[in-house]
Image 1 (cartoon, rainbow, N blue to C red):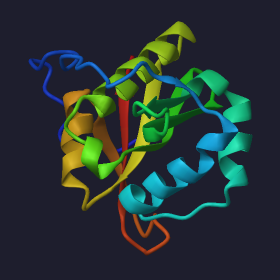
Image 2 (cartoon, rainbow, N blue to C red):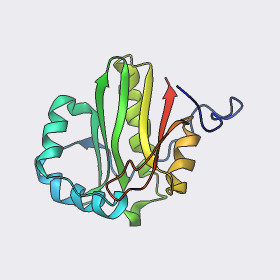
Image 3 (cartoon, rainbow, N blue to C red):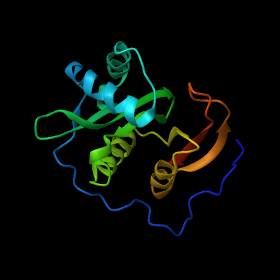
Length: 167
């Protein structure tokens, strides 16, 4: 692999402080699809067939984490998959705009990384739009590093970064 950006500095704290989520995280449920699809549309600028969420959840149910509000409606989620031996992949990760900065993203990422450790994964990867500076900053605080540039990766033609971190 070639590295196109500097890795996270070794002198940084290994994990950012965990902030409390508004409610405990839970697993994905089929009634979550409309709320999650709305978050995906707004935050990720993508539209997927609604059946995708259920089929991906079936492969690794504990890798699909949902943060909810007081009405149990999704306000953020992290959909993780295991497609490569000993490696977790953040396939989709987003928090509703009004909930950003409240600790929801940290709670989701912390819980996902812990589930990856419990499965004895050695690495976690993800993709992110090159224009998503806030997300790149967030991932860098979790010691993800850019390992490749993905040209025209997204449906609108935008480039992406492939990022990874060891566990």
